[in-house]
Length: 341
Image 1 (cartoon, helix red, strand yellow):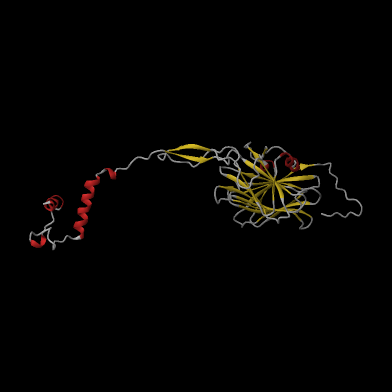
Image 2 (cartoon, rainbow, N blue to C red):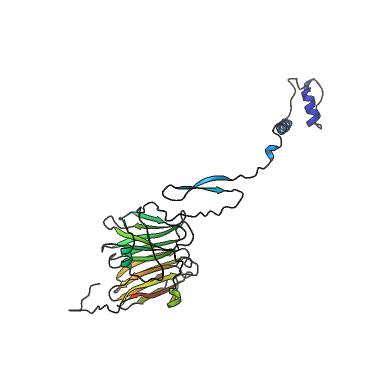
Protein backbone atom coordinates (compact mmCIF):
# COMPACT_ATOMS: atom_id res chain seq x y z
CA UNK A 1 0.00 0.00 0.00
CA UNK A 2 2.88 2.35 0.81
CA UNK A 3 4.44 1.62 -2.54
CA UNK A 4 1.24 2.48 -4.43
CA UNK A 5 0.98 5.92 -2.72
CA UNK A 6 4.61 6.70 -3.43
CA UNK A 7 4.15 5.66 -7.01
CA UNK A 8 1.06 7.82 -7.31
CA UNK A 9 2.57 10.95 -5.72
CA UNK A 10 6.09 11.04 -7.08
CA UNK A 11 6.09 8.81 -10.16
CA UNK A 12 2.94 9.70 -12.09
CA UNK A 13 4.50 8.98 -15.47
CA UNK A 14 6.15 5.74 -14.46
CA UNK A 15 4.34 2.77 -15.91
CA UNK A 16 4.82 -0.44 -13.94
CA UNK A 17 3.04 -3.51 -15.27
CA UNK A 18 0.75 -5.17 -12.73
CA UNK A 19 1.66 -8.80 -12.85
CA UNK A 20 3.11 -11.28 -10.48
CA UNK A 21 6.69 -10.46 -11.45
CA UNK A 22 6.17 -6.71 -10.89
CA UNK A 23 4.77 -7.10 -7.43
CA UNK A 24 6.92 -4.93 -5.15
CA UNK A 25 6.79 -7.61 -2.52
CA UNK A 26 7.91 -10.22 -4.99
CA UNK A 27 11.51 -11.37 -5.19
CA UNK A 28 11.50 -10.81 -8.95
CA UNK A 29 10.53 -7.13 -8.69
CA UNK A 30 13.36 -4.73 -9.77
CA UNK A 31 13.73 -0.96 -10.01
CA UNK A 32 16.39 0.66 -12.15
CA UNK A 33 19.09 2.94 -10.58
CA UNK A 34 17.60 6.20 -11.92
CA UNK A 35 14.26 5.55 -10.23
CA UNK A 36 15.93 4.68 -6.91
CA UNK A 37 18.05 7.84 -6.91
CA UNK A 38 15.03 10.02 -7.63
CA UNK A 39 13.02 8.47 -4.81
CA UNK A 40 15.93 8.93 -2.35
CA UNK A 41 16.32 12.60 -3.29
CA UNK A 42 12.61 13.34 -2.84
CA UNK A 43 12.57 11.64 0.56
CA UNK A 44 15.63 13.61 1.68
CA UNK A 45 14.02 16.93 0.74
CA UNK A 46 10.86 16.12 2.67
CA UNK A 47 12.85 15.25 5.80
CA UNK A 48 15.37 18.11 6.05
CA UNK A 49 13.09 20.85 4.75
CA UNK A 50 14.16 24.02 2.96
CA UNK A 51 16.13 25.61 5.82
CA UNK A 52 19.30 23.83 4.72
CA UNK A 53 19.38 25.85 1.48
CA UNK A 54 19.03 29.27 3.15
CA UNK A 55 22.23 31.43 3.16
CA UNK A 56 22.99 32.64 6.67
CA UNK A 57 24.37 36.20 7.12
CA UNK A 58 28.00 36.49 8.34
CA UNK A 59 28.48 37.16 12.04
CA UNK A 60 31.24 39.24 13.62
CA UNK A 61 33.83 37.52 15.76
CA UNK A 62 36.69 38.46 18.10
CA UNK A 63 40.35 37.60 17.84
CA UNK A 64 43.57 38.51 19.62
CA UNK A 65 46.55 40.21 18.01
CA UNK A 66 50.08 40.26 19.40
CA UNK A 67 51.19 43.90 19.44
CA UNK A 68 54.64 43.59 20.92
CA UNK A 69 57.43 41.44 22.20
CA UNK A 70 56.14 41.68 25.77
CA UNK A 71 53.27 39.28 24.96
CA UNK A 72 50.65 41.98 25.41
CA UNK A 73 47.49 41.32 23.44
CA UNK A 74 44.50 43.41 22.55
CA UNK A 75 41.05 42.37 21.35
CA UNK A 76 40.10 43.43 17.85
CA UNK A 77 36.52 43.28 16.60
CA UNK A 78 36.59 42.02 13.06
CA UNK A 79 33.40 42.13 11.02
CA UNK A 80 33.52 39.73 8.10
CA UNK A 81 30.87 41.75 6.30
CA UNK A 82 33.31 44.67 5.88
CA UNK A 83 36.56 44.69 3.85
CA UNK A 84 39.75 44.29 5.88
CA UNK A 85 42.69 46.56 5.09
CA UNK A 86 45.27 44.43 6.85
CA UNK A 87 46.87 47.42 8.60
CA UNK A 88 47.13 47.55 12.38
CA UNK A 89 48.58 50.24 14.59
CA UNK A 90 51.87 49.31 16.20
CA UNK A 91 53.03 50.28 19.66
CA UNK A 92 56.53 51.76 19.78
CA UNK A 93 59.58 49.82 18.69
CA UNK A 94 59.03 46.10 18.29
CA UNK A 95 62.21 44.29 19.26
CA UNK A 96 62.87 41.43 16.85
CA UNK A 97 65.00 38.38 17.28
CA UNK A 98 68.66 39.23 17.69
CA UNK A 99 68.12 42.82 18.89
CA UNK A 100 69.82 43.87 22.08
CA UNK A 101 66.85 44.00 24.45
CA UNK A 102 66.36 47.04 26.64
CA UNK A 103 68.04 49.49 24.28
CA UNK A 104 66.29 52.36 22.53
CA UNK A 105 67.46 53.90 19.31
CA UNK A 106 68.12 57.62 18.92
CA UNK A 107 66.14 60.26 17.08
CA UNK A 108 67.41 62.71 14.50
CA UNK A 109 66.46 65.32 11.97
CA UNK A 110 67.60 65.27 8.37
CA UNK A 111 68.61 68.93 8.31
CA UNK A 112 71.16 68.69 11.11
CA UNK A 113 74.86 68.43 10.18
CA UNK A 114 76.64 66.25 12.71
CA UNK A 115 79.83 64.26 12.69
CA UNK A 116 79.46 60.48 12.54
CA UNK A 117 81.65 59.87 15.59
CA UNK A 118 79.61 62.39 17.58
CA UNK A 119 76.40 60.54 16.81
CA UNK A 120 77.99 57.21 17.77
CA UNK A 121 78.64 58.59 21.25
CA UNK A 122 74.97 59.62 21.63
CA UNK A 123 73.12 56.53 20.43
CA UNK A 124 72.88 53.08 21.98
CA UNK A 125 75.14 50.51 20.40
CA UNK A 126 75.10 46.74 19.96
CA UNK A 127 77.89 44.35 19.06
CA UNK A 128 77.42 42.09 16.07
CA UNK A 129 79.82 39.17 16.20
CA UNK A 130 81.31 37.69 13.06
CA UNK A 131 78.80 35.51 11.22
CA UNK A 132 75.82 36.63 13.34
CA UNK A 133 72.65 38.55 12.50
CA UNK A 134 70.86 41.37 14.31
CA UNK A 135 67.42 42.68 13.37
CA UNK A 136 65.29 45.57 14.57
CA UNK A 137 61.70 46.46 13.64
CA UNK A 138 59.82 49.68 14.35
CA UNK A 139 56.37 51.18 13.90
CA UNK A 140 55.07 52.81 10.75
CA UNK A 141 55.50 56.35 12.13
CA UNK A 142 59.24 56.22 11.39
CA UNK A 143 60.02 57.99 8.10
CA UNK A 144 63.63 56.83 7.81
CA UNK A 145 66.42 55.25 9.80
CA UNK A 146 70.15 55.93 9.84
CA UNK A 147 72.39 52.88 10.13
CA UNK A 148 75.79 53.25 11.79
CA UNK A 149 78.56 50.64 11.79
CA UNK A 150 82.17 50.74 12.91
CA UNK A 151 85.01 48.58 14.21
CA UNK A 152 88.03 49.13 16.41
CA UNK A 153 90.27 49.64 13.40
CA UNK A 154 89.85 46.27 11.70
CA UNK A 155 88.16 45.72 8.32
CA UNK A 156 84.38 45.57 8.20
CA UNK A 157 82.26 43.47 5.86
CA UNK A 158 78.50 43.34 6.40
CA UNK A 159 75.14 43.09 4.65
CA UNK A 160 72.45 45.63 5.56
CA UNK A 161 68.92 44.82 4.35
CA UNK A 162 65.55 46.51 4.66
CA UNK A 163 62.73 44.02 5.19
CA UNK A 164 59.06 44.83 4.62
CA UNK A 165 56.84 41.88 5.38
CA UNK A 166 57.72 38.22 4.90
CA UNK A 167 60.17 37.38 2.10
CA UNK A 168 60.28 40.97 0.82
CA UNK A 169 63.60 42.83 0.74
CA UNK A 170 63.13 46.14 -1.11
CA UNK A 171 66.67 47.40 -0.35
CA UNK A 172 70.03 45.66 0.09
CA UNK A 173 73.54 46.92 0.79
CA UNK A 174 76.83 45.00 0.88
CA UNK A 175 79.42 47.09 2.73
CA UNK A 176 83.21 46.86 2.94
CA UNK A 177 85.39 49.21 5.04
CA UNK A 178 89.15 48.94 5.13
CA UNK A 179 89.27 50.68 8.53
CA UNK A 180 85.98 50.74 10.43
CA UNK A 181 87.30 53.22 13.00
CA UNK A 182 88.78 55.78 10.65
CA UNK A 183 85.86 55.67 8.21
CA UNK A 184 82.68 54.48 9.98
CA UNK A 185 79.64 53.61 7.91
CA UNK A 186 76.57 55.86 7.89
CA UNK A 187 73.63 55.31 5.54
CA UNK A 188 70.09 56.69 5.54
CA UNK A 189 67.31 54.25 4.63
CA UNK A 190 63.82 55.41 3.71
CA UNK A 191 61.09 53.34 5.41
CA UNK A 192 57.70 54.13 3.81
CA UNK A 193 54.72 51.99 4.73
CA UNK A 194 54.46 49.52 7.60
CA UNK A 195 56.10 46.28 8.74
CA UNK A 196 59.63 47.62 8.15
CA UNK A 197 62.69 46.06 9.75
CA UNK A 198 66.45 46.50 9.36
CA UNK A 199 68.81 43.53 9.46
CA UNK A 200 72.59 43.70 9.91
CA UNK A 201 74.60 40.58 9.17
CA UNK A 202 78.33 40.52 9.90
CA UNK A 203 79.74 38.44 7.05
CA UNK A 204 83.29 38.50 8.44
CA UNK A 205 84.94 35.83 10.56
CA UNK A 206 84.45 35.53 14.31
CA UNK A 207 87.64 37.53 14.93
CA UNK A 208 86.12 40.65 13.31
CA UNK A 209 83.12 41.91 15.33
CA UNK A 210 81.47 45.22 14.54
CA UNK A 211 79.51 47.81 16.48
CA UNK A 212 76.18 48.99 15.09
CA UNK A 213 73.44 51.43 16.00
CA UNK A 214 70.22 52.87 14.61
CA UNK A 215 68.81 56.39 14.68
CA UNK A 216 65.10 56.90 13.95
CA UNK A 217 63.71 59.96 12.21
CA UNK A 218 60.07 61.08 12.62
CA UNK A 219 60.47 64.53 11.05
CA UNK A 220 59.00 63.63 7.66
CA UNK A 221 61.54 65.88 5.92
CA UNK A 222 62.90 64.71 2.60
CA UNK A 223 66.57 65.16 1.66
CA UNK A 224 66.90 68.15 -0.65
CA UNK A 225 70.34 67.38 -2.01
CA UNK A 226 68.97 67.16 -5.55
CA UNK A 227 67.55 70.69 -5.23
CA UNK A 228 70.73 72.40 -4.09
CA UNK A 229 73.41 70.31 -5.80
CA UNK A 230 74.33 69.60 -9.37
CA UNK A 231 73.31 66.10 -10.26
CA UNK A 232 74.27 63.85 -13.10
CA UNK A 233 72.55 61.03 -14.95
CA UNK A 234 74.65 57.87 -14.98
CA UNK A 235 73.61 55.48 -17.72
CA UNK A 236 73.64 51.72 -17.25
CA UNK A 237 77.22 50.45 -17.26
CA UNK A 238 78.71 53.96 -17.01
CA UNK A 239 81.22 55.24 -14.42
CA UNK A 240 81.17 58.63 -12.71
CA UNK A 241 84.08 59.88 -10.56
CA UNK A 242 84.47 63.05 -8.49
CA UNK A 243 87.61 64.14 -6.56
CA UNK A 244 87.49 66.25 -3.39
CA UNK A 245 89.82 68.76 -1.81
CA UNK A 246 91.72 67.82 1.38
CA UNK A 247 89.54 70.22 3.39
CA UNK A 248 86.44 68.10 2.76
CA UNK A 249 86.11 65.78 5.76
CA UNK A 250 82.93 64.01 4.60
CA UNK A 251 80.64 63.97 1.56
CA UNK A 252 76.99 63.23 1.07
CA UNK A 253 75.83 61.07 -1.82
CA UNK A 254 72.30 60.42 -3.09
CA UNK A 255 71.26 57.98 -5.79
CA UNK A 256 67.78 57.68 -7.22
CA UNK A 257 65.84 56.59 -10.29
CA UNK A 258 62.50 57.45 -11.86
CA UNK A 259 60.83 54.49 -10.16
CA UNK A 260 62.80 51.68 -11.74
CA UNK A 261 65.15 49.41 -9.79
CA UNK A 262 68.55 50.78 -8.79
CA UNK A 263 71.77 48.75 -8.94
CA UNK A 264 75.04 50.55 -8.26
CA UNK A 265 78.46 50.28 -6.70
CA UNK A 266 79.91 53.22 -4.76
CA UNK A 267 83.63 53.31 -3.98
CA UNK A 268 85.84 55.65 -2.00
CA UNK A 269 89.33 55.68 -3.49
CA UNK A 270 92.51 57.16 -2.07
CA UNK A 271 95.15 56.65 -4.68
CA UNK A 272 94.97 54.61 -7.89
CA UNK A 273 92.55 51.71 -7.40
CA UNK A 274 93.00 51.82 -3.61
CA UNK A 275 89.53 51.09 -2.26
CA UNK A 276 88.95 52.42 1.24
CA UNK A 277 85.18 51.87 1.19
CA UNK A 278 82.93 49.88 -1.17
CA UNK A 279 79.13 49.63 -1.20
CA UNK A 280 77.06 47.38 -3.45
CA UNK A 281 73.53 48.82 -3.49
CA UNK A 282 70.20 47.43 -4.69
CA UNK A 283 66.89 49.26 -4.37
CA UNK A 284 63.57 47.96 -5.63
CA UNK A 285 62.20 51.46 -6.32
CA UNK A 286 64.80 54.20 -6.65
CA UNK A 287 62.21 56.95 -6.34
CA UNK A 288 60.42 55.69 -3.23
CA UNK A 289 63.61 54.50 -1.53
CA UNK A 290 66.62 56.48 -2.81
CA UNK A 291 70.07 55.58 -1.52
CA UNK A 292 71.60 58.20 0.78
CA UNK A 293 75.00 57.80 2.43
CA UNK A 294 77.48 60.04 4.21
CA UNK A 295 81.10 59.03 3.57
CA UNK A 296 83.97 60.17 5.77
CA UNK A 297 86.91 61.30 3.63
CA UNK A 298 89.92 61.98 5.88
CA UNK A 299 93.29 62.60 4.27
CA UNK A 300 94.13 63.76 0.77
CA UNK A 301 93.49 62.37 -2.68
CA UNK A 302 89.95 61.17 -1.99
CA UNK A 303 87.86 60.25 -5.02
CA UNK A 304 84.28 58.94 -5.08
CA UNK A 305 83.50 56.56 -7.94
CA UNK A 306 79.93 55.61 -8.88
CA UNK A 307 79.31 52.64 -11.17
CA UNK A 308 75.84 51.87 -12.52
CA UNK A 309 75.93 48.07 -12.55
CA UNK A 310 72.52 47.79 -14.25
CA UNK A 311 71.91 47.54 -17.98
CA UNK A 312 71.46 50.52 -20.25
CA UNK A 313 67.68 50.47 -19.73
CA UNK A 314 68.10 51.47 -16.06
CA UNK A 315 69.84 54.86 -15.69
CA UNK A 316 70.25 56.51 -12.31
CA UNK A 317 70.65 60.07 -11.07
CA UNK A 318 73.57 60.87 -8.75
CA UNK A 319 74.03 63.97 -6.59
CA UNK A 320 77.21 64.54 -4.60
CA UNK A 321 78.17 67.42 -2.31
CA UNK A 322 80.59 68.17 0.56
CA UNK A 323 79.01 67.50 3.94
CA UNK A 324 81.62 68.75 6.43
CA UNK A 325 84.42 71.07 5.35
CA UNK A 326 87.27 72.08 7.69
CA UNK A 327 89.59 74.69 6.21
CA UNK A 328 91.90 74.46 9.22
CA UNK A 329 93.05 70.95 8.33
CA UNK A 330 96.69 70.98 7.15
CA UNK A 331 98.03 67.93 5.36
CA UNK A 332 101.42 69.35 4.41
CA UNK A 333 103.95 66.64 3.82
CA UNK A 334 107.13 66.69 5.84
CA UNK A 335 110.48 65.00 5.53
CA UNK A 336 110.95 63.08 2.31
CA UNK A 337 107.31 63.49 1.29
CA UNK A 338 106.43 59.81 1.66
CA UNK A 339 102.81 59.27 2.67
CA UNK A 340 101.19 55.86 3.20
CA UNK A 341 97.53 55.66 2.28
